Length: 131
Image (cartoon, rainbow, N blue to C red; front, side, top):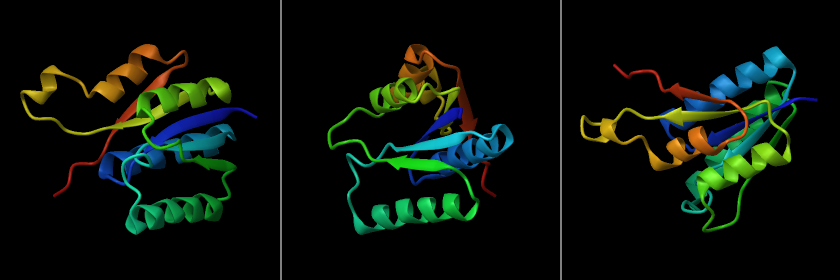
């Protein structure tokens, strides 16, 4: 079975990446591997609840999925890349957030590293504009 790896954070860009990855997994009949990219920094009950909701949503959609929580202190880009290599992923899905004019000069360091260092294709998605 093919696999798609997605980096997830409980923010609009993370939810957009998860939604697109789930759509692609359905279309390709692929296993979805969700890497919780905020697990090393956010260990609050709210973060645990958000991740439980992700698991429940994927189960309800009937997707073959695996939610991974890398160890504390891990680097999100390294976690995504190593997971993609481990499962021989078809591609990685990441979410991007809108940046200020100055921030546009520099792509987020994690996103940039995944785009440049991953051995498989990377699909970058934006969250829908609010309002």
